[in-house]
Amino acid sequence: MTYDRRCLLSAAYTDTKLWEEREKDHQNLSLMAALMDRIYDRNFPVSSLTISRFVDNISSREEVDQAEYYLYKFRHSPNCWYLRDWTVHSWVRQCLRYGARDKALHTLKNKVQYGMFPDDFTFNLLIDSFIKNEDFKGACSVVEEVMLQESFNLLTTQILSMYALSSYLATKPELSVSEQRTLGAALLICGLKQDNSTGLSAQLLGCALLGKVEMAAGIHAVFRGMPLMWTPGYLGRALAIMERVAATPGDSKLSKDAVDYLEGLLQDLSSALDSKSSSGEDELGGEEEGKKEEDEDDQAEREKLPLYASRFKELSGQLQSGGKVDPSPLQVLVSSLVQQGLASAEGPDMEQYQRKVGEWEAERQQLIRREKEMRERAEEERQARQAAKAAAQ
Amino acid sequence: MVKKKRIRLIAEMARKIRAYRELKNRPRESEKYALDYDTMTRPHTRKTLPVLAWQDVRRESRLFSLLSGLRMFGVGHLFTRKSWLTEHPEAPSYWQVTKVKVDYTAEKMTKSPLCVLLFSTGKQESEPKEMDKVMYHDWRLVPKHEEEQFKLYNPVPEPPIRYVSYPPLLRAMLLAQRQKDELGSAAEEPTLPLKRDVLLSKEYFRSQEKKRERQEGTAV
Image (cartoon, rainbow over all chains, first blue to last red; front, side, top):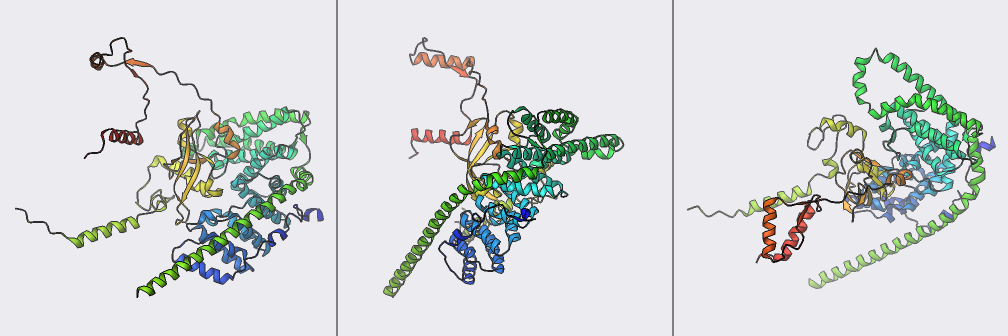
């Protein structure tokens, strides 16, 4: 049991000490809220420093909700491009601190409305906190966001996302079409970054899921809104992966349950297609309208299905003979990857994070200084104007 | 004779105010191009979209809905149009985003046009231009892991331009002119290239006008 409850990222990674050590800028939240309301009423732009101060000074759960409202307003103001990285980071940290994880997830999901684009380190923290609480569905939603941003750059992010995805799949949930699509895309894009058996198995599983969605709903339903290629034939891509693994002489293997999943999928689809074609002749009249919507590409895909099935049989035969099928399930592969790679990958991440925090601090101080200067200048001008008016009278 | 026209100052002022108000209240792009997806009508003009476009509108997305979900509004990403994919299947045509201007008032955050570099049919434009047709439901994001493969392009070398002699009357006129200018018939006969080497666009005509102005000088 303790094996399951352990968190992936080391305590040093998730430590808030470095973040807390920053210079505090204590402000009264209600004053800041009133100030921002006044500025919005007068149609002036709110500076990014104000909103970052607001988010930094959150001290309770209710204030998290207030900050969410102000983030929304900031995104819909002329300054929305200037939402700083450190504001987003501190927002996520505060949400996690005050137990508002679902709030953080909500703002992340509606990133268009809130402008929430965290960087890689922040994503890691978020995924890890979800994994710690065994909320694999939430973790998968975060991984989906990472996928939509295509920010699987750090090794730690890749490992964490694979862990979340594999654990979620291990619970064998009932997946709707859209969930299959997102999981497949996340698996595919994350697996593309890794060159080992875990990555390849993830790619295979991802392509299989996407191929299933493609067969069911057409290629447009697959790539709409996702960073995926629009050329049809995801099942063909899955088979190409198998072929590549069978051909290369290296150490890479494919996980058995990925291969089994593809096999089951192909069988289901072939049987469904057979039954549809046999009953289709009766319903041709009503089906005409539905058929017109289908693209020629989708129909071509469906016709290729028996070809895929036969090619799959020979490829799986090749894989078995070459000893390229790893009998352990995907989750075990991922856990081994975690044990090997995570600790070493964390080191450079933390150094980069420290450097980034330093940069953010410098920028913040510069903004504070600039604001003070502008205020002084405005004050001087006002005094000069008043003096001029008094002299004129 | 016609009575002298009375100068109506107040009417002038009213006209100016009306023009100013119209300028201030002109509809934002988000309002102008908003679309009701169930009935395929624009609420602003209450016009329906043509039927052939309905399938595309349902299936594809506008550029900004793709951009708003990306970090920094998708600066540095490549975007293609579905019509280009069907039009030029071998040569990759895409825009690469360099700058975005955002219309923040709309709920779904539509944008104003952006400046981008265009690669059209394998050739790159020289400088960043503003994208047009952004509000069309036609755009697709090129995923990062496919970017390299998408950009691959072996340009087929174009066959050399062929030249033809001018139509007979024009040719006679040209030859007569050259004889008058005492070039002699030893020089090469002028020929007409079969490929137009100047793209007749707005910018071309504007540059020609400017050139003409420079040569003639402005009217006194």
